[in-house]
Image 1 (cartoon, rainbow, N blue to C red):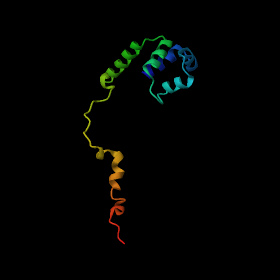
Image 2 (cartoon, helix red, strand yellow; image 1 turned 180 degrees about the vertical axis):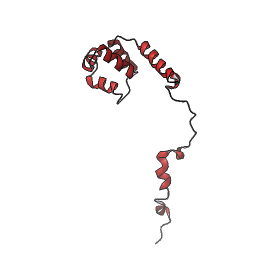
Image 3 (cartoon, helix red, strand yellow; image 1 turned 90 degrees about the vertical axis):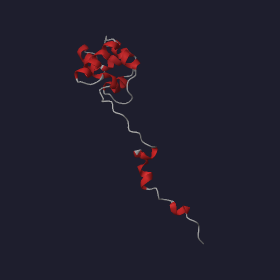
Length: 115
């Protein structure tokens, strides 16, 4: 959707500074949105930007769906092929690999104390 808004911004000759001012947003936030950085834009932010660019949100959504279809992607899955998720236990997760690798560390502290 950002590329659709950016194309409209360019075609309209509207600077990001003017867009930010008219949208009531900071220039920094508008820049972040158009560079697709940081937190994703909210629906409200997209709607306000679209309004400033004299677009309706529904037009942007239709265009985004049209582009996805033309690439052979399913708009319902955002272009990704739906794949079943493999069932995994907590111990199978990558973040637990280190604890499996070093599982025996500290075992000596559990041995009976000998004097």
